[in-house]
Image (tube, rainbow, N blue to C red; front, side, top):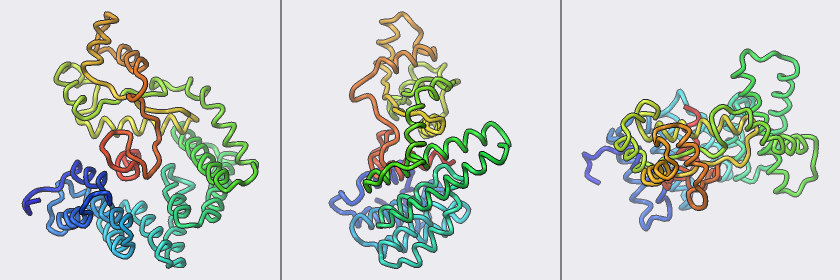
Length: 330
């Protein structure tokens, strides 16, 4: 990569997708870190992201010490939004055997479990480091606190109520899954998780944003869609990044209302055109697009959410935790 070339978001995602499976992961790390050192990151907000992707590649390769150094740099690069980077640093400290430091780092972030629906990345770091019992303790404490607030305090707004519901659902499901992995018997919160999951079909009936499976346009198709039908520019976001961010947030909202069996279905311009011609409908009409989405099955259907370390649903090739998962926090 020439030293004058900017490191774009797409390139960072491409490198993240290659990861340690690349024949030369060290070269990928050097490309990321070199761009940061030389001020060649196209979007300055991606500086911390680039360092965390490099840290992840090093961790996969077994170089935990250097991964820790890069995670520490990422924290310094994004001091206003450093919680995720700090959680990565805490997990690395635990996996390096620096138990007291790692737990201290993560414990400072523990209150986020009661206020931020996305903060279960703390639980992931604990579980991946062999601290599953601590993870369960934190999940239980967060559920206790949120449910107590729900019982004793009136929510400031409908949005606040929806966020509390999202957190209760997410925390109870994560706790349920961990306990199931350990073979523990059901308790009160496991029963709550089961009830919430069983009620998901009723919750989805209350959604105004469409079906549980949302229509997604891969990058090339998104660009072609707006060229083929320019009037859609008024109803779609300006960029593909904004399109997948919009879908990720809609899926998070649906999950918070108890939605299960959520997913995206990948559309094509040719497919929509053929569907509209076959049904005699307008391809730019929202109802037509919803019906087209309902007609797609098989490999076009991608369940949501993928595992944090699995390939992202958007098709970028990057891990979900490094790609669309953070988009819901913007």
